[in-house]
Length: 331
Image (cartoon, rainbow, N blue to C red; front, side, top):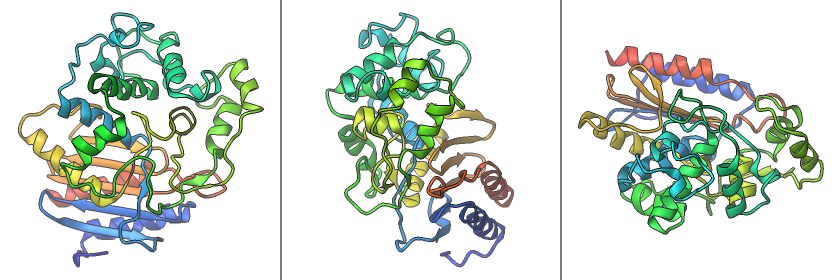
């Protein structure tokens, strides 16, 4: 803990870290910041003061949605301009707001081969599950395609776009895809995703997928610097619009501060699930990120909750406890 903060937020952060570590994680980093300086900066279980972790779906808002906003990509453009298999009703903005009607998840690497082009074709060719432009239904596949749209519009790979237009301008020096630096171990191979395919929980798969899974070369080694998400790693080589970002709590604070400024100036944040008074997003490997405009705070929780051999700890209650405490103390 730094900055000598012994108030309720610091105490709650320490309690949350203990809970997550007791659940099987080996590393936890928590940051709570106002627009000027960190109020709480806590790291447990790491030899580094700035541990780099896989943040999973936080990639959606920090990379893909941020690039669409910062590069001014037209949200009303029909996605079939780049992916003709989609209905004309599907717009770029629908991908970013989870309104495109796409499946929540599908193991592209088990149906489309293990290369970018064929995997994108599968993602765009699957029948819609819901009406385009309708209700929000969370979709990894929507952000797979949204990341590809950014690449195609600007004729550059997503990792370079993120470096040049997000990480570099915001001073996020420890953020990126396929990191070279030593990272906190994420998980024990594809254990969690392999079980998802075998059981069909929470996303049912078909017989062809289950058959392909029996001979697939699943990862069994300790993942450190390899993204946990199977589609990102096996189908897209570690760079995708829905997952793949490795970052630190400090870098997410830098991103959150810019987002606070954007919201204060009347900007419309893209990609965040609607939560009254909060802009927040989870990441399956153990990440939580939130900007609290009314409290003028950024809150980050990073962990490697998938690393243990048992069921990973649920971060829902510890995260709620932390954010509620931050909001109360800021009043």
